[in-house]
Image 1 (tube, one colour):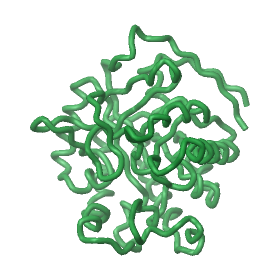
Image 2 (tube, helix red, strand yellow):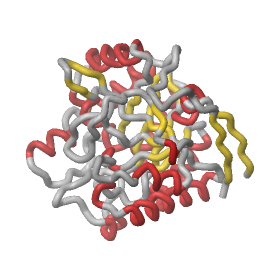
Image 3 (tube, one colour):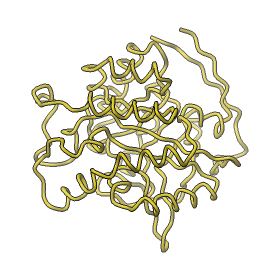
Image 4 (cartoon, helix red, strand yellow):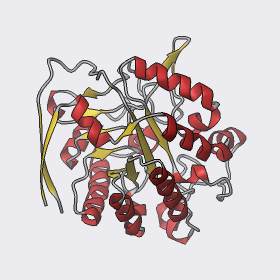
Length: 305
């Protein structure tokens, strides 16, 4: 397993940090069609192996689209997916993409104990590092489910050996969401001084924080509005964090039974996602989270295999 050291030059305070020349960050949460959270029909992990998978085909399609546009991104691999399909992790690595962790078992953070979360996030990290031979620095929780009810979350990430996180959704959300006005990357307290938080990008519209840049939000809103809001965020001195799932470029993937509202959120405009991704990759400049760390945390890096 790879080991690594991280040193940071401390900024004057823990206030929001901004960079003059912002770029966007594109990320993929690498999970399958049956990993939709918090439904009566969501299958337990014991049944995942029996279900027809679409993640290989869909993720490879995303990698090909990224290669066409010569863009490197951050891939938040679910540990279970990485364990079953290690070739996907290696393929992404060979194309220059960053490997990051999405936990192992796709559970909501606020339904886990601190010890359960530490075990799950550590297990995923080890699986990914054993596959790539490189250190995994970043984490993203399932469903952005860190909340005020899980105050131990950041401390446990530090204990697991992560250097940055992208789990905070700074606004109301069905599962997850935190009440905070910190919209740009920021440090997490003195006890986690090496951890940088990249909150999911929102921008205020009519006084409310709204997201336009990933998942159902990206699918729902017309591209012209997504583009306009992305430029608004960049002008505010923040990076725009885009995120998608492999299933979102596969309109014919199997469906989980759910009510009409959840069905709308989960499956609206699946046929538009690939075109929006291609336009974003053509019209914006992107970097990985790992590269963005150097802008926001003044990171210097030394790695030893």
